[in-house]
Image (cartoon, rainbow, N blue to C red; front, side):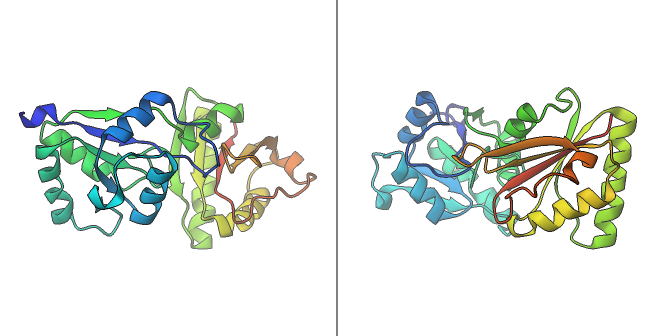
Length: 238
């Protein structure tokens, strides 16, 4: 086989783990079960996921390589040797690989070396949140984590709101789960009364929460139960 015959499969994983699979289609599961070589962010999580889908290959016969934000470029480059020998699965820690995910570095490398890259269908928290928000889905931007420094965070929020006012663009961002409530309180204090804020929390889970209100309405609403849960925040001021 030439190297072009070996593919890099992009494997989405559940955003949260349930007893039964409600988010991954059969074709995606079929491809995952056909692979024995994976590039993952955390081996423990990856192995747990593979057991959850009843992967037929024993753990000791699998090849797992770690790619996270601390992985050196030279080590990532060495993963190309895996693709020269077999199909490889790039697995996200949760959701879609390559999106707000360190795996994007290897996806770029695979393209550079002429290997086909195939995305598999599965959950993406960003798109799920946008779909359910009722905000502008034609023009949007994802910003990842906002700055921790309060002054820089405030400046960025003002910039995002101003951009939304001028362009109608939906602004999407996130926070580490244990800081969700402080961020929510900051948004309530700093954004304009007419700005819409959507909170999408624990997507695809039994306690999923997706609420969109104007800031003036959020101020009179019950504080959402979002602390220590994965959440996305979306704003639009158009």
